[in-house]
Image (tube, rainbow, N blue to C red; front, side, top):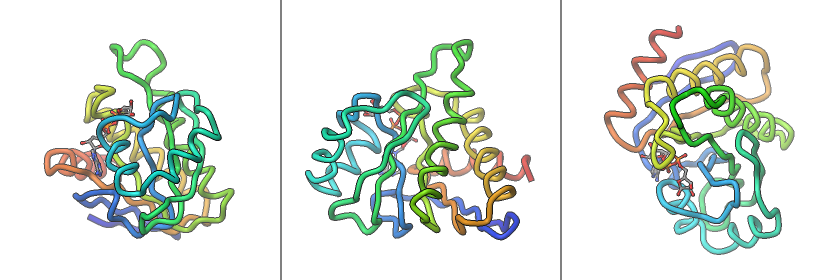
Length: 176
Ligand code: AR6
């Protein structure tokens, strides 16, 4: 599914983010930038050890913030590592932290003058964020960004499985 928002495009696809050709892909990292399971493991495996070397130099990233490295062997030029919240019932600022993870990633892409960015569904795997609410926050943050900025031309969500893709499609229809 693809929609125009202001001057930009918001795109939803099912797939593997390590294969994306956007200028940057976003990693759902942990605050130590130590690598792990899920999309984080897949990005480090596919990109090779130079990404971890840069992560070690940076040292860490607080929840809701983002840092950037080059992308090793990946087709993308950069990896933006952001840290979503661990979901613990919703009363610990999780929604704001998840919004911030998306917004800070977009800010960083914008600072580097990047035109296209791909996101996974941050926090919805190991960090257990309920999918519908996480999708709503992700999509609203992306739509708001495209409505208020004209630098980034493409924001793509790359959803790993069919079920996640379908929830994102449903939530995007509600928002528009
Ligand atoms: N491409 C796109 N999406 C993927 C891929 C892929 N190759 N692989 C998995 N996903 P998760 P989190 C989806 O657990 O919840 C790690 O250990 C997955 O199906 O990767 O933010 C980190 O080091 C799910 O929909 O990230 C942290 O410790 C989504 O990506 C922790 O997990 C996010 O799931 C972060 O947990």
